[in-house]
Each structure stands twice: as C-alpha cells, then as structure tokens.
Length: 357
Image 1 (cartoon, rainbow, N blue to C red):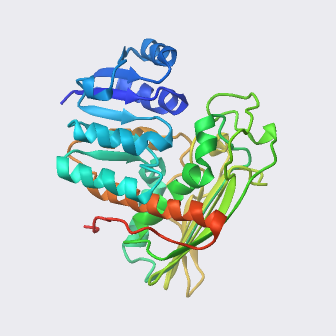
Image 2: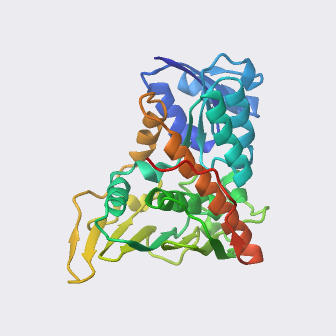
C-alpha cells in the first residue's frame, strides 16, 4: 500500500527527521505539508518535493496524519485525525495529560485506527536487548530501575522545545523505556526540578541547527530528579538534565534484579558525543560472583533509531497497540513528575494501560 501522508508542523524536528524519511520512503505515494506559517510550509514542500495543504486536516485526502507540531497540540490533532478516519503518527509526547492520552488511545480502539508515538530510543538495538534481558528473567526478580540522561549543553534552540521542559523532552523517553521493562508503573511520584542561569552556553547549537542565543522567555525545567515509589514491584528513579556539568553527554540505565544487574551506558539523540563514546554499551553483572561481561551489541554512532521508528510506524503488519499503551503510561508518569517537581509528591493518574501480551 502506498500511503498519502499529511505532515502537520514543518519545523526543526520535521525537517531533520520526518520529512527526509517520508520523501524517500517507497511506501509513501504522496506527501502533503501543513504549517501555521505558510512560508515554512511552502519552503519545506519545495525542498522535499511535497504539496502544501492549506486547509483543515479533515479536508486533505490523506490516509495518515503525521503530527510534528508543539506538544500541547498533539492530543487534539490526533483526535481529529482519528475521528476523520486517518491513522496517526505523532512525535512524543502523545499528550501532556493522562486524560488526553487515554482519550486518544480510546478513540483509536473505537475507530479501529492506528496510533504510533515516536519514542526513538525504543528502536535502538542496545535498548531492545536490554528490554529482552530484563523481561526474559535473566536478572531474577526486578528490584530497582535507574535511568539518567545528562546533556552538557542541551537546552533546545527552539521555543517549543524549551517551553515543554526537560521532563517531557528527555524524561519522557526514559519513562517510556521503563514502561517497556515493567507491566505497570503505579504508585506515588516524588521529584525536584532546577532551572539554569540564563546563559547562551547552555543552548545546543546542534538542536534545531542554530547557534545564536535564544532568550529564555518561558519558564521551564532544565533538570529534574524523580522517583516512583510503587505499591508493589521495583523502585524507579529517573533524572535528566539539559545543563549537566559533565564532560560528555551520557545516558545511564541500570536494571537491578535479585540475581543480576544490566547496565546500559551510551548516548541518545543527535548529540555530537555519540561518536566519542567508547566501550561496550551493555553489560551484565552477576550479583553473587561479581563477574561482569559485555552483551553482544555495538555502540550506535549513527542515529539509526529515528529511521527505524518511522519504518515501524508505516508497517501495517505490526500492531502498535502495546507501544501505544506504553506511551499512555509514559504521559501519566511524566504528568506526575512535572507536578511533583513543584508541589511535592503526586500520585500517578490512572491509565487505561493495555495488558502486556
């Protein structure tokens, strides 16, 4: 089947990741682009060989709506697309509230349409092996998950990225990874957040293709730490920073069980440090003997996970229901983290999580 895709929002992430893929994907027969700024839509359409769609999404004869707009618009646009009979691909996060995320998932079930959410780290070979190891019983009974993402200079150069905050920008990827390990993430969330000095050195020149100083004219969290204290099951700790005092960008994930511990040390995203990181990305430590050995997977220098996630989104032989359930769970936890960072402990909102197969 050759798809007609309508891409909404032709900004930085669309032009760096989504439009190059869609323009070259053999399964896309027609590509339309829409943006609130007609000049941006026209420039993107001209560059990627697409057509400009200037009206409501319901008036475009596309069978897939591809959402790359600011995060606060994701749920509303996804609901409109589903109700008009289209499949949906949406940049993370799916929504900014658990109730909105659940509404999207519920509408997808009712309409029989597909919703794919772009949590790119889940499509890395090292992350896939980590999830397989953790869920396959090799670690024993899971006791503790710790996930940390440190960027030494990673404040987004785009206003939309700054306004949504680090909880949703980086933290949502970590929480989504944790959702892939665990069946559910119920419990109480505790978190603290920090805001950096207004300093141009914190702005990531590679994020959005800009090196100019961008005024911090909206409140945002540049760093946070949080814990999910479960009613039952393992403890979850998660932390992320756009302005970490580290020499290189780094992602560290530890999954500790009763018998062994799996540790992932690598770099996510478009960081220039991907090519500088050495050593095995994934190791397994036997807690009784203390022996540690690498698992058979290579460090990823090129960001191939971005293409993999989009190929999966258009593969009609893959059911996205479980991934959608993880995305809903992710929104519920991140909503609680963002709230707890300012008011203290917060319960995770109830989510309509689809049971794991």
